[in-house]
Amino acid sequence: MNAKLIDGKAFAADVRARVAEQVARLKADHGLTPGLAVVLVGEDPASQVYVRNKGKQTVEAGMNSYEHKLDVSTPEAELLALVEKLNADPAVHGILVQLPLPDHIDEAKVLATIDPAKDVDGFHISNVGLLATGQKALVPCTPLGCLMMLRDHHGSLSGLNAVVVGRSNIVGKPMAQLLLRDSCTVTIAHSRTKDLAAVCRGADILVAAVGRPQMIPGDWVKPGATVIDVGINRIPAPEKGEGKTRLVGDVEFDSAAEVAGAITPVPGGVGPMTIACLLANTLTACARAAGLPEPEGLTA
Ligand code: NDP
Image (cartoon, rainbow, N blue to C red; front, side):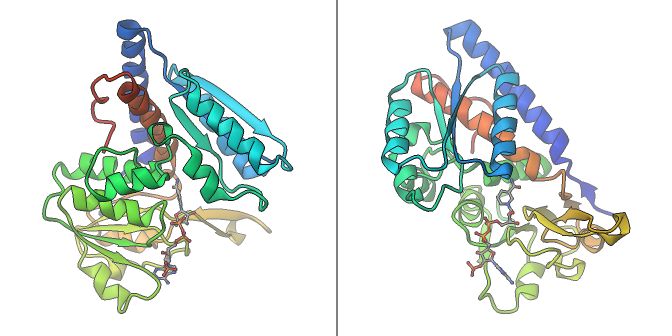
């Protein structure tokens, strides 16, 4: 392997430590404790794990965590009323409604009800618009984490050719907006892109956010490029025993690591950064609500 490994696990630990340090300062200097409310509807096992981890890491960073677990049959009106209540609660600076929601609840309506100033997932249309027009927004956590790692590795991103494969609202599009804001020349590729291999070969920064195991081989990677692999895919791993599986990204790691200048692994790359950035966004929302300066190095 020639590429430098970008260790997302270590980077996320560092982000969490910086959040905790600034939370402690906020408490000491202003008597303020950031609070994050997480709402879970139903008992989806993966969502339960996410919510538990979010709560644990929120408390470890010195912030208040408020968990609201609602029954799967909760009517939409009841969930909307809870969101309104959290919007009005001055102890709550960030609100996250865990997705997916049960079918009888209109996800878009719920996201639109969250106060944009508390929208720590960055999915509210106001935050999407603010990001697109280059204004101060709350930015989706996964692309924010990718941006932090890229800035750390490159310093300035100005003038670099960035290719983002994937155009979803939660990863691809906001990632492209953030790279554009940092003055990259950005190409967004998707399932209809012609000659994706050639497009990828032009990238100084290649971000893969597709959800297809190992679809980007090493010979699509420009020598020396930085590769950020957002994909999380579970594939069979017979070498570990019958019925066993393992996680892989959208990039064929071994061949890409031979040519890239730097690369994130899966697992242990982008994944751990997402919750760290949720904590960073909660701190940012709290500071903004109090009219205080932005947290250092933790925003887009
Ligand atoms: P979506 O399914 O919403 O979007 C996938 C995108 O990939 C689409 O824009 C699609 O194009 C594009 N695509 C699909 N097939 C191809 C192809 N053959 N060639 C080029 N582009 C293609 O996924 P998400 O953005 O939500 O997630 C992407 C991956 O990132 C997933 O593996 C997910 O698990 C992971 N993820 C990881 C996170 C983390 O690390 N914390 C957080 C969020 C996601 P089109 O629009 O044309 O259909």
